[in-house]
Image (cartoon, rainbow, N blue to C red; front, side, top):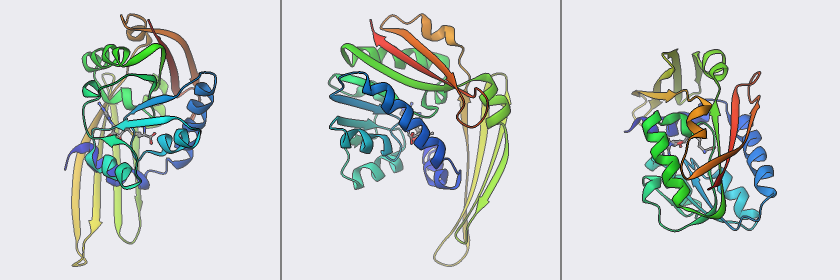
Length: 227
Ligand SMILES: C[S@@+](CC[C@H](N)C(=O)[O-])C[C@H]1O[C@@H](n2cnc3c(N)ncnc32)[C@H](O)[C@@H]1O
């Protein structure tokens, strides 16, 4: 199992449903100002945002590097693939990467990814994403939490050092024999300074809004237009 599949297995124990809904509302209201008919959701997770946009009449495609996430999308009838976003064919009116997806990429991967997304946008196309602020990493994401039910136990231990958040996930899952299977892996997330986003060839940063998802100014929403 990959570390992203472990995240997919553990996500429902993280208590992020309310924050996810708040983010979806924010993205939806930003997209409302534009005439978006086609949307690509990179890091689409379980497809919650695509479901909302489809109900608004938008044609959606999602990609995610977790096969488990993509299976869940496909089981709801969504158009989703477990492929690198750079390999998506076709062009879109808007591309989104919601809830930390850009923080999963290091600086080199990020620049490469963003330039490639520019090529997948129609003229006047929009790319919208959110990133964690330094405060969001240091004071919100860092630390330890655990959660359990009859069937599962999750421990999450996150350390922020040298602009990287290393989050160790340990999940115990009850199996049919009544014993527990242990899964453990680490996800690294990278803090990104805003100046990276201001030097792109294919995308122009037209708006940045720092806002509070969990706590004071823990996230920044970035809105780009295709150059
Ligand atoms: C915090 S989850 C957010 C999921 C979804 N956007 C949502 O809001 O519910 C981050 C997602 O990004 C995916 N991911 C991480 N790096 C990725 C990449 N380079 N390309 C595509 N998906 C990626 C993970 O597998 C995970 O599903």
